[in-house]
Every structure is written in C-alpha cells, then in structure tokens.
Image (cartoon, rainbow, N blue to C red):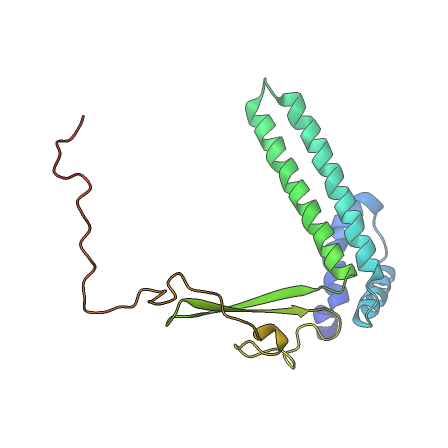
Length: 194
C-alpha cells in the first residue's frame, strides 16, 4: 500500500479522477491507473508526444476561455463596470496562460534551448566581461559536467573588455577618506517663490 501511495500514477489518478468525473462520468480506477502507468513510462523513456498534444490542447482551451470572457466583458461594458473589470481580468489571465503554454510547448518541441549570460564587472576599471553560453535540453539538460563554475570559459569568454566611462580614471566609485566635492548651491540664496 505504501508503494501505491507514493506512485506518480496513483497521485495523478487521485487528482484527475474527481475533476474528470463531471465531464466523462465515473470510470474504473484500474483501467485509468493502467493508462497512466503507460503514459508515465513513455515519458520516462523520452516519448513526450502525449505531453506535446496535451499542451497544444490546453493552449487552445485557454484561448477559448479568453474569447468567451472577453465577450462577456464587452456585454457588461457601460452598465456594470465591476463585472466588466472582473471578466476582463480573468480573460487576460487566460490569455497570458495560453501564451505561457505555447512557450512551454515550443521549448519542449525544440529541445529547451536556454541562453545563460554571465556578467563580471571589474571594480578597478569599470569594465565588464560578458560570456554567453547556450545550453540545449534533452538528456544532458541539468547536468553540471560541462558547465563553468563561476567563471567564463571557452570561446565565449574570450574577447575585448567593454570600455569604462572614464578610461583614465576610476569607472566605479571607490570608497576613500576624502569627502565628495562640494556642489554649488543651485538656488544661490534667492528668495523662494510661492
């Protein structure tokens, strides 16, 4: 029983079944559990086609929710401002979630390419070194074997430094015992206007 209680397919079954019951009726737990085990096994083996289709379906559904809530907001505009505002807020949330779902689908379909930018600013001259690495997804995503450990390495880390604001002086303020130069009084002791 402990294995079943910790099984990912059992978790999915316990959450999905009550939500699906209203649309699809009560189904047998054993059959649903078997389907979930097969889908999870496919994902574990690298077959993400089910999840790509699921994300595409969710994006379309969220777009439909956006369209319906926008229509309801328009119907209430002018007479019921509170209802208009509530419907539009919910519509825009559905639109944003649809966009995020499409972006997740694109990352899943294209191997989750990610650009990491490491910027190091040298306090002595106000110069920055920028290194850019592209990490692609797949089986190697998330492994630290080839990743740099806090420093720019490889061809991306080689290049000229960016010029500082003052090539002959300090680009970044450095703490010292000397006080700041006095600024002239902008008002020059003129009388205030009302």
